[in-house]
Length: 297
Image 1 (cartoon, helix red, strand yellow):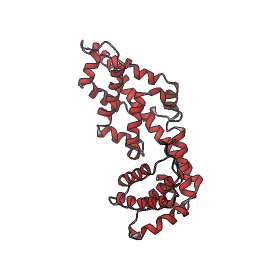
Image 2: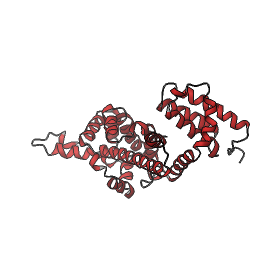
Image 3: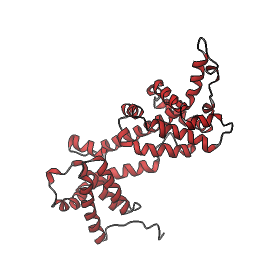
């Protein structure tokens, strides 16, 4: 959607190769954001050792300074992440260390040490897998994502934060549940990447045909007030309906209505719903929808 909007509003001429390259750039930026967010979580957990060293090196350290609990630095899930060569390589190749602000890391860590979940964690001698994961998840959900300064920090360094934050949020939680299931060399995944590129190319190649379906449905709408982004969303939705047989029509309709509400005007959800529903009914009546019914297969 963003690629089509950027390319079409810039020149009015759709260059497929330019749009695809832009999409690949967006996907790489998403991978950067995902990797950095994981990196930030691991650095917060590891800061316990830095905190212990700093306090022990005081001129006159107190007994408390000399007995900082560093259990979290040995968190088993933390080290399962850190010991992945692909993770270390991704941090290096994406130059993410230069984006890390140690003051941000320290701030999150100090907040963590004041929480009940942390105090309970450090006094337990065992390392239960569930608790190890819960603590890292808590750092992410309750400390990072709930702090406006942290989200502003991420937004400042990653321009796509606003667009990707919900997806990244779920990806991080999934990763913390199954860290070895992710390939840091292809974070978005080959299947999703293929789908995104295929949909983009289809929307470009089938623009004339999809507009033939869309334009007659606009008679009850003021064409001057129709947002360009809304038209692009409808084109993408129609392409999914027609050319992506494994995606149920209901899923497509609901998804694009939600996207319209999030990304366009306050009236876009109603507009996109009306146009797409009308086109869907027409295509269905004409037998032009060829969807795979997995329940019957």
